[in-house]
Amino acid sequence: MKKALFSIFGILFLGSAGATPLTGFYQTIDDGTQKPKSIVALYEYNDGDESKLAGRIIALYDKEGNGKITETMNNPIRIAEKVEGKPKMAGLDIIWNMEWDADDFEYEDGKIMDPKKGSVYRSVIWQEKNEPKKLRVRGKIGPFGRTQTWNVMNRSDLPSDLQKLDTKNWKPVVIE
Image (tube, rainbow, N blue to C red; front, side, top):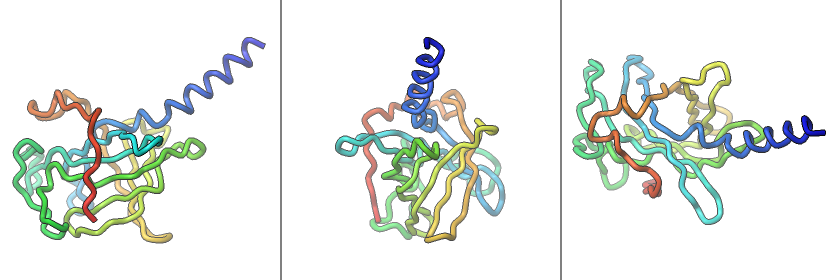
């Protein structure tokens, strides 16, 4: 009886905590060059009674693909030309409204923006059990889409001006 209760408690605990591991910092990779492109902070926020996931670009790597961070949200330079209002890319929310699906162990039903094109797509985010240092991020239109693999980053890997970044009170600023 104790074993059964412990197992049920364990499943409930893991199921309720399942969304939290996907928050954190991720290095995005350019589809064409396979070089680091940006760092995105995935954070949870409350939307009414629901907890949802959003993602904000916090740093950008150099355009040449040398792997050097050239700007952060504290010193943004590049502009998202095709996004309404032409905001700076560093500091731009590119993921919002993602809801946790405990049955499939993924976030879904949210949106992702390609800041270079200004296009917004439906999105799904998940982590493969056998690759805990990778995150799968898929943007899609209907049954068609593209999946990117993002690399997990430690806070200590971030530029020094972002290492104490606190995302607790962030809310996405959505530009569609």
